[in-house]
Amino acid sequence: MDNKIYDVVILGAGPAGLAAGLYAGRSRLSVLILEKGIDGGYAVFGENAIKIPKGKLQKFVSDSYIGKEVYMGIRPENIHDEDVFIQAAPNAVVDCNVEVTELMGSETYLYLSTSGKEENIIARVNPRTTSRAGQKVQIAFDVNHLHFFDKETETTLLTR
Image (cartoon, rainbow, N blue to C red; front, side, top):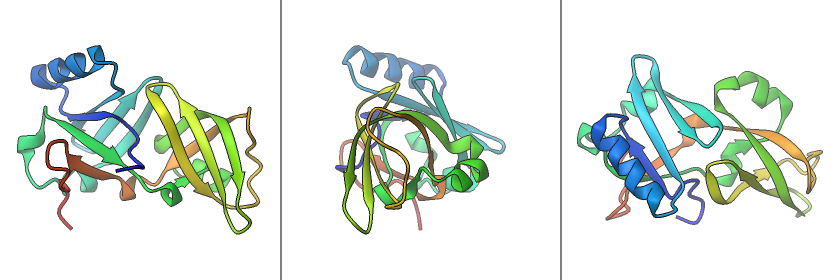
């Protein structure tokens, strides 16, 4: 779970979901609330919002997780800073500050901060990236590669 993006993700913005979000927020955890809609849902955190496709939300093993706290994660290679990806996925874009750029030769790691997230987001990007420490950049999540886990057991909440 090293690559989790949020401390807590809550499925459902009904009374139970909002109460869970308030409780988690009081504990100084970064909270994400997902709401299921006709065409998918949105994950809102800080000043950012990304659209979760309907197909991804339909893969949840049970609607019983609506309103419960869960973990959300994404692998570093599924976070992009290329203009072509950002333009192709405008509903998955997050504004970030580059804290550290780690040049590894065949790839580059970006350690990013954003509103609504206390820990760094880590992205593995093309070594030709122009992103450098101290810059404000946009990144885009490949939302088809988001992962969700039960907070207690850490088992996956998605069917294959």
